[in-house]
Length: 397
Ligand SMILES: *Cc1c(COP(=O)(O)O)cnc(C)c1O
Image (cartoon, rainbow, N blue to C red):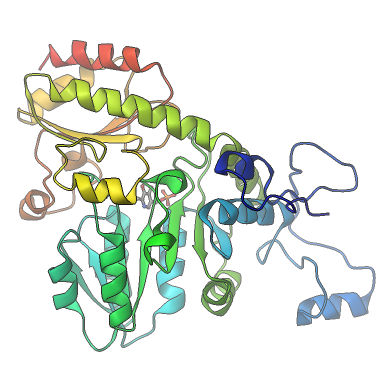
């Protein structure tokens, strides 16, 4: 029994609590966790019909599972997408989106400022299968245009981008993709599904690491791909089914419960992030604050057009070398040092020595990553406690 009728036109907060619920005959309030790999059939004929796709119903949890379906339906309702498929991790979602659509001889263009593993897929893994790639400065529409080739089929970006929170003009890049007969895929993790809807700006596929704000409490890995029913059915579904990077029912259940509180968490975290960004901009010893919600962000107007608020991440650069920056990090008491993000706990990363360590000095400079650059993922602690923590650590620099 499905329980998502009558929800059309309601607010995200409401959709995130009720959409997609498949209530069993027991009438449970919280969604059931279907922790089973297989399904049984009333008859051999029924098994045959389900395998042929002529009868409704589940076949095997690698293909689909009721708890996973609830998660997929709920996030699709929030995003305004026709269809969604869960994956085992965010990287499985990135790889499946690209690998299910591209084939040998195709060309993909990626923004330089994306999650490190996504860049490795575009620049190292896909070329091994005969898929050519080019990376460009995602902020520069002319660079996207200049990189287009007759065989370009996908443009891929992130906005805000990791780690310096540069903004990509999604509508602009989508237009360039469509003029060339290509599609645009957007990794929307940093904006969260609440604050930015890439589909509205012309993106064709939206990807999340659900590990981040969707779970939001640092527990499980997961990912999701959202698009049209046509794209999901023609490309993604078969690829996932045959290659197996399936979202586990348990992780889907955790994510489903995470969605219920997404609005409350992301609003609170974003409000704290805005306060922290303002505080940082007034401190001596800070060379640069990058926050999409501040008027001094180099692309503030674009950020305002695309995003409902500045979001839960802040990037800033200390006016110091690596040693000074490490002294700051080691002095923090409440904020934890971690490369993860989107947790209830505030987490801070030093991209130059962790997430972006592998890049050459030149590539780091190109992305604006210095020895003093830090990326802060703001959690659910009281904003004043986080500011006090940062202030005392700044005195150690
Ligand atoms: C974390 C992250 C990923 C990868 O997600 P996993 O769940 O760790 O596989 C991809 N893109 C962005 C922007 C991320 O932050």
